[in-house]
Image (cartoon, rainbow, N blue to C red; front, side, top):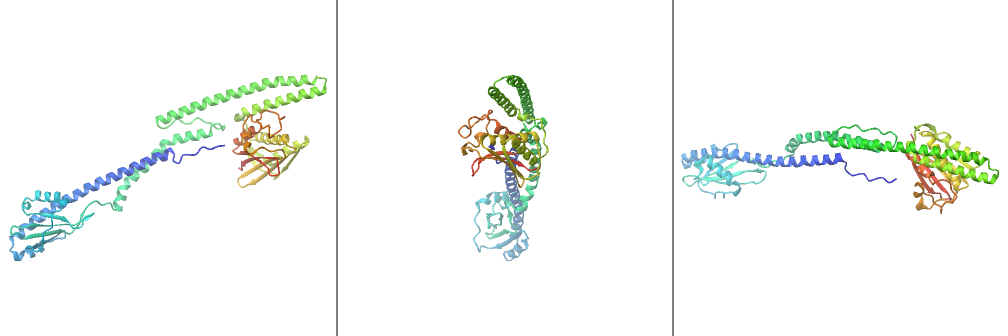
Length: 437
């Protein structure tokens, strides 16, 4: 059986991934815009405080004599601003282009600084910037200043990121749970689709979004239609089987009145073959609707009984395995499958060997023969319905070639697998592998 490769990411996973990507993008954009706005707000407040401090410093220092200006500048120094007065001992800093906006704000709030040749610069550009500068007094001396506390720019510390992510993570988890609840009907639909044909089919509850309800309703309708078609086919098969077996029974009675023994045996043989063909056809076409329910059986005793019955009819069939092995199986179906394998072995060889081995969680039931075997490239093909490999087997085989197909179908319904392989010592091995439960 070929299994389709499963997709690497299911529908829920794709939706969650899209949701996660959306949250990440939204968080990144929001954080960037918020931090930029915060940076501009911080610089705006800093410019206002600096303008007020410079205006006061300019007026107070200009009122003092030159000998007292340095002391006054020291008194005007605070925890936030360092103020120094110098006659003209060092060149004033150039005007920093990135601080033109801040310079214009300072001069707009304090017009008295408009003619002071105010100059600003960033002494340590980056996330934390120190603003320094100078302004010219009326006597051409200079008042130098520097901020002691940095102006914080874009701040993306881990704590701030985690704090900002907390509501986003909460929304993401909530969205994931809602998505899972929304997709629950699809999960039930997938489970029902996997069980379809196993005898446990049930209508799927029509719940969820409108589109999902439509899909579920269509599936239920399809399932009901398929069941109706199967039931019609099964009833038709039973009717055909009854109609065919009735004339076969009459032929058997009429064959008994034939005087020629050789002709009587030949006709009875043809009738028996026709009856077997009808039986195999009905078993294959109606196998999915087998009403038998699984029950506890002794598989080892069943195999030993099949071997003894075959030996009582003159066939060479042996059994090798445990005396008892309890398993939950469909009694009649599994017995018919094993019997088919034994008959197939006897038809193409002189003897059949039944054996059971218990390997971990699996039970392997082997049916070996000493026949000609099957070409390696035909081992899978021979289990297809209506396939007969005449070059590898005898040409006088009976039936439609449904024996192995019926066995494979029966084993599959039990959750097992049928495999064929050529034995090293010659002959064919048919192995039924069943989960031990």
